[in-house]
Length: 167
Image (cartoon, rainbow, N blue to C red; front, side, top):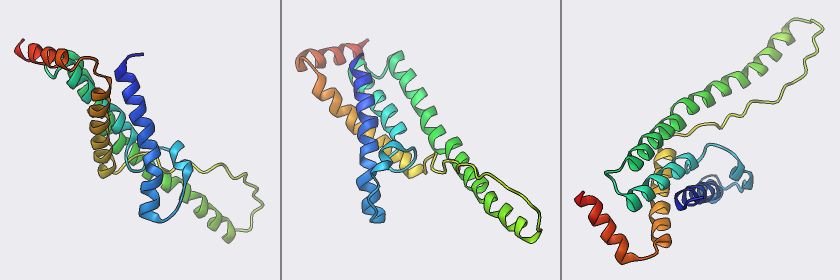
């Protein structure tokens, strides 16, 4: 794998890990299982795509097709994380509330009804806008750090960036 993939995956893992202490600071509740769940602060989706885009910008240059692809797909992922997936989470909350409503309806009518209770749908799917922005900032920082840690020859890298900008 290339360095960009390693940096993006590391950023996703670090963002997931950061959710645990951030949740503890906000709610005074220790929940290590948040590492394996979607949603929450910071968005690991945003962190991953932002770190990759930052790494591509620093290593290949902004006026490249690589950067353009990474930026556009990253923006789509972040929009989806806070838009479509968040709305799906809100819809899931309403569907889960229907179970309680059905129970109340059946209490009023004495009908023999045996319902196997299904597993509740996962409610924490998407992100609030501040979680996406937090993930993006986290990703830019980890992408920059990853770039700095993986550079081989600092003088040659500066020359390459200047040469690319000149082209």
